Length: 308
Image (cartoon, rainbow, N blue to C red):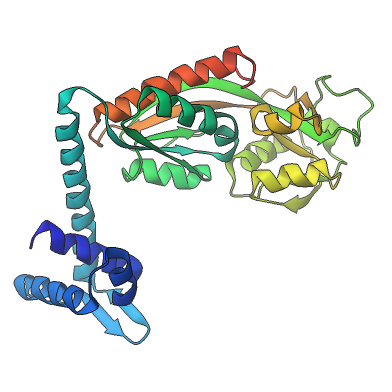
């Protein structure tokens, strides 16, 4: 086997068909098929089950796929390390961002990397925390922002800040007797129509945990796992929500939304920057990490990111 054959095998396994892998790699289907046959002959095992509905990996194929990905990733890291040996950070760096972090951080971070690290290609991936946790553990990404770090495997964790959660309403639909900006308690919101992420979302779990502690049942009328859509619904007066203030900074700036901090003890959450210690550290990823910390500090100092 050689690295090219492993690359072809990974593409076939991930795409689930020879035709899709052929289009992805720009290699003719018969050539791909021959490469797989050669690997099977060399190893003496069947790697793929072929059917009219596509391709399924055998047990042996699944084992090879895992190792092939590791080998291919090591080759990419090797190439990056050699390129960086001249001292100038270069190459690709990936960072996972929950939606509320991405809202405030992704654009200034991308612009700063573009100017300060012109030979680094930043890949910022917005996703739910559960996915980001998996990606940092399996070394798919270099860096990650997370709210919960319990049970993380072999990771270096930096606690950066804590941010308070706020109650949000449309500027023309404030439902409380006290004016916007006056701190409120979670119990004050029990009868209001709330729009929150679904139960598997970390933010929702924290809110529900706090509600249970004070024996309060929240009235959730819509579950929506899209930050943009939650804010749109609230702006239109369809309900109210609970978010970190940074997550709705754009709506606050435009005057579409107003908010009040929630006073309850557990209605704040820590934010961590995480790196998997098993993943080789490139000069590019170290440089991006330094810049990320600088950008975060600047956003907090300028009150764009409301956190301590």
